[in-house]
Picture 1 (cartoon, helix red, strand yellow):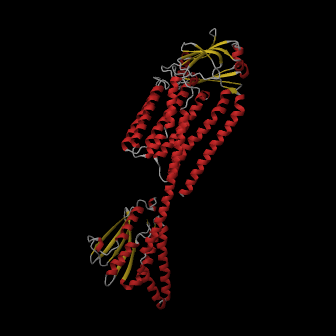
Picture 2 (spheres, rainbow, N blue to C red):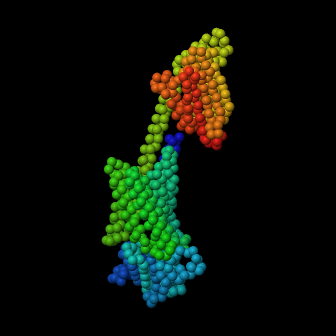
Picture 3 (cartoon, rainbow, N blue to C red):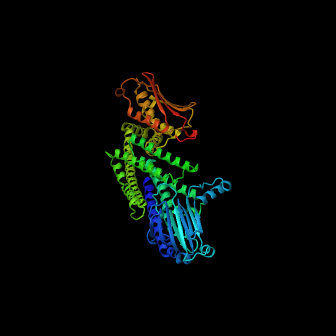
Length: 623
């Protein structure tokens, strides 16, 4: 069964990877042939110059990103004829900034600043009491400027001098213009079309990653026979990685569907917090030492406490999530570094921990490059996502390899079970002792001339008895007591042929409404016959009885044979303790039953099997 399911796992992997490849290829082709004819996304919509924080004026280069860090950046120049007249419409997507577009004489064309937000906020208190937009939080905003409004209503032409002012209101200015403002020029529904052609392929890709992480690794772990915390943790990490990357691609579009800029901001930031928390828990799942795991729990708890605290401060209008970004970035960096140190402690003698640490090197390198880029302005590109993708792919390959190893171990375990089964066959065959078979066959042979009909009946009974022993090899679940009783009757019928009048059998069956392991009573009855009445000169009686109590069912095997001393050394009392111990273990493991044996020398032996009612079929459970 596991082999079939394991094969299906790899089939699912191949199907998912194929879907990812097809999706990417199709959308790359669509973009190549269609997208550039519908919209453009220039670095800046003005042709002219710009100044950062009151510094010198620099020329605007349309083919080069603007990577300067700023608190206030001012652009002045003319809108190109192509953007103004050919495309017609212009959309500005902004993150965490206020901005104003005006003419050279001060006429405001479009404004999004603190005063405007404050008026909107005060209006929302009466009109939308549950709104989350805050007066001092720019959030994420999308605003469209239509050509008819610019050219006809305001009289803007390609010769008009325009000024575009952008202000980053937070204390630490480690952001660039390209990180905060994005422009799209288009004919009609430009931002929706840009989302469809630019963002949607990646979104679909990472939606598959989310499902892949959420279902594949936990399900694969379950199929292999256990729920492994490491696979669960990585499944959630993959899910939140996909969610985080989806948000990276759609954050600039959120205000198209969510009217509150603050909610757009919160969705983006909270997704990042969840991803970091998933990384921390995944690190912890790869730790084996009790002290390191306890420390990892504390570190994860502290980070989550910080995340909850800054979220509450946002809701209470005390401090927004962007203003808390530095605190959370430091908390995330410190937490991950502590996790790395904890894993470093486990590296000694733990090759898995070493490989795990090495698999995160690509991400650490790209983070270092991005941090360096903040100070020397290499390209303005963000390499973090590339390093994260490489690291996650390495993790997926590593865990799939681990699953493959466990799958092979499961197959090996099945082989061992098969070998164990074959060993059980040998044990079972050995339990049908040769002298018992010889005696039974001898008795049947003697009857063939004396009483052929009885001999025929005895032969059929003996065959049924042997078949019952063989069938028990394939029977792992308990059976009704009636089945076990029929087998006992066949066994005792054959034994009575041997002992004749020296063996008497009596039955006192008061209840049969219970189950027990197949052939679990025969060893007790065999002991009563062979070591009880069989050792007594004038024979005796074996009684098989059942009864029901308030909490259990009882099977009682009693003989009036020679008895024995329970306190005597086991090796000297002449009884088969190996078979008895096996019987006790089977009864306990399958039904929670126990066996009580009492004996008095010269009076006989009583063996009592007590099966709790809890777990019996009539108690709505499976024994």
